[in-house]
Length: 393
Image (cartoon, rainbow, N blue to C red; front, side):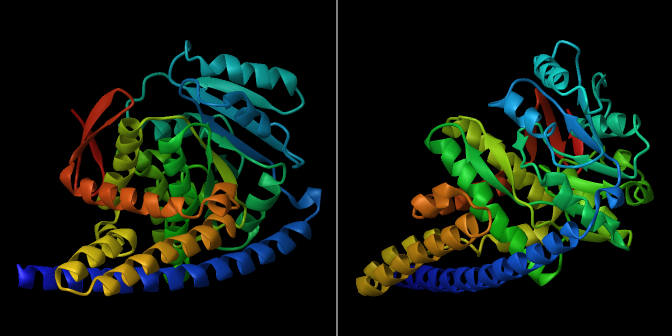
């Protein structure tokens, strides 16, 4: 028992060290993000309306979601000279169609259309919707975004200009979680604002962005064509990650935008939140297995708790209490610097301690991702292959 306690103590000390290193990298990554965002803003402000290209906004829909009409409305009131909005859904009786049509009717001066693409023949339904919408336009710049996203008026003015630079093939955005429910959805939202964003900022610092984030991906058509179009994504669960990976591998630069958008999080119970988060974690494990494995060492609170228990067992409770206190401070600093300083999530400023709770949940989800090899997604069940592809049962 003594040696087991010593082993756990070493593990706790190692986890505390690695999570501290990760925090330092996150702080540097946040500084770099702000610097790059300022540079992007200056470059965008220097462009006249005549220099901004006509772009197509592609929005797949699937049922009613919280504040769906407000989400759609935000894409029709953009401060951008020339753009169109294309909606797509699987079936003509989808309730989201009525919402989209109401918004379209209020803004007849914004070109828009709706396509019913039918049941997807591909495992990844959003990828099929994107392909159907892309076939309806010849524009060189395509902006894909989820239906549960709400944006500011300057959205296109900030996400499109980087695509005009030579060699840039794709851009993506980090986002804050906008909670519309209770405690569990709040944990889901703060995970977006802090946990996910911290990982992105660190990846951008260490090796640059070579992936996409689903709520917004802006792509040049020549880069998309180079990888085989949206068809290349048809079998993958994490199509947002894969498209960035493929475009980077094709020799294009993938840019992280300084623009922050809001991802609306619906009210949910623990089971639904767990299932949703686990699906993403399993997809990440399959898409980048080594990176996902290393993620287990960036959490702080689990190692702080282990340190407290093992140090008490070994007769040094104050050491364990100090390590747990540092783990809590670690998470609160990350919540303030990333959750408020970068994504501007007010919950991270008001309740920075909440991210410590989320950290424990995030670790449990990470561990659980190694126990699952199949998933349920939109009434269908899939087996996951080792390369991240899905195979329908």
